Image (cartoon, rainbow, N blue to C red; front, side):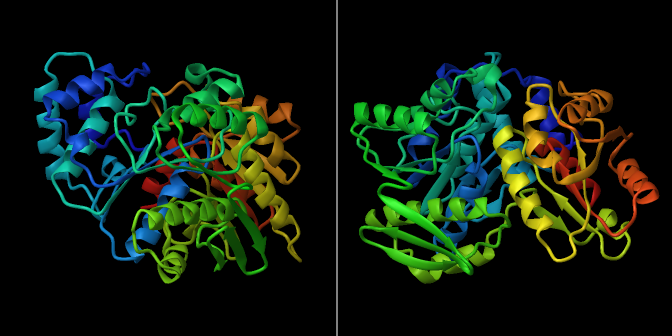
Length: 432
């Protein structure tokens, strides 16, 4: 995420990125703005640790393929702030951002407000002014006390719960699941993705208190991968579907969870048929999630036969997913040697992330993290890599890391840039 985005600079100058969980600030600001959160189309509210963004992308693609106009709020952005707010199918433009940010700032006055509070209020204000058929809102962090959790959705969704943001959500899975389950609303159906037993129990307990009907993977619906895609099955629906355009076995789960959401929306009289589901699976896009970079200065700098991949995953579960992909690559008839280029924040479990990848990677290069974040230096990151048996050398930046690999290792090779969405954003910006 580039630091020179003028909107981000403006937001940060007035609203420092200090994270304090709670809804009082945004509720006060929204009231001053005329309660735009109450003037929105039917909403799907999405929480979870991993797969939130991919679920949102699949769900949006399917709904838009059926002809619906969809508002979408996601975070973080990769290159430009505008990516966070999609109004009825288009990214918010700079003029709208400037005008509505001014409106939010004037309504807020001198009252302390966080970066995410004011950006969430801005999104709800923007959505309230343009008609749409559906809105998809992604939780920023946690759920119960997240700034987005001031809405009354038509459907809630919780993707797999794991360990992340432990400095704010705690380091016990029960507590993290309790935070995620905080988006559940009374008598409102909820689609639940694949969960560990402890997370599933917490979610079920919280849902029972609210009489919220649960639609759970492995219980009310099933997903079965097969050679050409996957089968989705529930009591009322059976579909044999192609694999989604997003790469990785884990995207089968994310796509199936989106289909489960579609089934609940169909019960709410949304007309999204199998054709739209298939079209959505084929057209879905979500950058920096096992994305192969095939055009631009970075891949163009590599010799023929080399592959350059990008993934923003940054916790242990993401490392496991990438490790599975690396295992599949290793089964290829003539597998390319795998090299990692990475940087990570000190709030993340770097060893936990790298461990599943270490057995498949030949070596790694650690690069500096984008400025403005508490992060491991390349030397510290290399020490974390060494802890899991991975040879690692510091590099000054992404370009230097690629140059060093090409100068010291035999080509062709497969290079995976990973460890952070912030790093992924800088890579995308650099690659044009």
